[in-house]
Length: 144
Image (cartoon, rainbow, N blue to C red; front, top):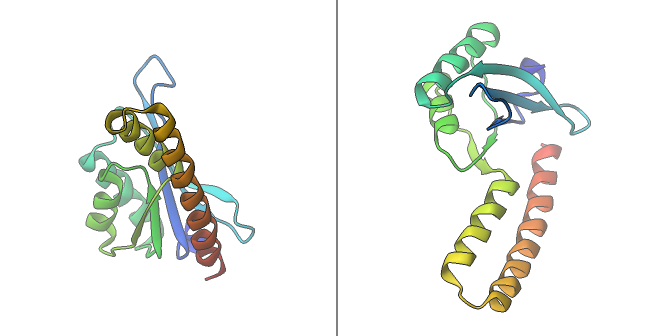
């Protein structure tokens, strides 16, 4: 599935705090012909830093060869994108997960805008822009 669909793009994310053992499940997903996410690879580890992600991506490279997605979507942390470039050698366009962008906006609004009503108005406007941009750009990526 990675060989067939990775050229469009890849999404990478890890679980956090889901077990009492401190293990993380990092998943690499591709989009199939219908735009549905398909888990192409996964890693169970106690870390998700650059070094561990390089090891994970090297195993993907050994199985599939060099994958050259147009984009790579992850959270706001840099280790996924940097490790991908380090192992695969290609530099896909970096996309941020909408959930993480939304969370960062909420945190910054609560810190920087003291009036809760003004913060709420700004947040509504930001979400409108994000939703419009998200749908338009993502649809264009899927059609490529």
